[in-house]
Structures are given as structure tokens and as C-alpha cells.
Length: 126
Image (cartoon, rainbow, N blue to C red; front, side, top):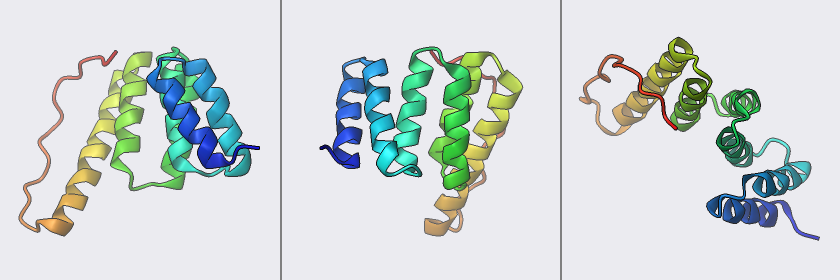
């Protein structure tokens, strides 16, 4: 019987082959053993988004954000998923949050880092 890591890695392999439905099955199997594994949930959300299942993707990436509230990458993904659903103002808010979190991380290494630039026009990511 495969363990959670094996399922996750198999899911990543399938995702790389554009076999998104099969990847989701593997991610779900990994989550049976480790239900709060944020990386797996994030990967599953990305596969769901690729399939046009935007509501599921948004729900799952919001779960990732609950588990890892300072993860700029999760907010970036949320912004992309919201864009794909046509929710541009919400996508801009998520992108702004991602920029702010990234800046706060940069400040830990470089206290003189300039603040992030203001929001610009959103271009829908496919």
C-alpha cells in the first residue's frame, strides 16, 4: 500500500503529463493519510483549476490559506483562480495580499526593501 508521499509524488507526475483527473485521485489518496498537508491540497486546487473547476480550486486554496496564512504563493494561486472565474476585484485583493506577504518576508532579509508597487491592471491568466 502506497503512503501519502508516494501518492503525492505520483500526483505530481500525472499533473506534469496533463492528466489532471488522475492527479486529483492521487492527491485525494494522500490526503486520506495526511488530511492537512497544505502542499497536497494546493496541488489538488491547481489541478482542479486546470480542469475549469474554479469553485473547488478556490475552496481548496482557501483551505491552504487557513493552514498556512502567511504563504504568499497560496494567495498568488487564489488570485489566479479568481481571475479565471472572472472575479477580478477579488483577484486583485488576493494579489495585493501576496505582494504584502512577500515584502514582509523580504524585510526579514533586507530591512531596507522598498514596499511593493501598487496594484496594476489585471490580465486574466489562462
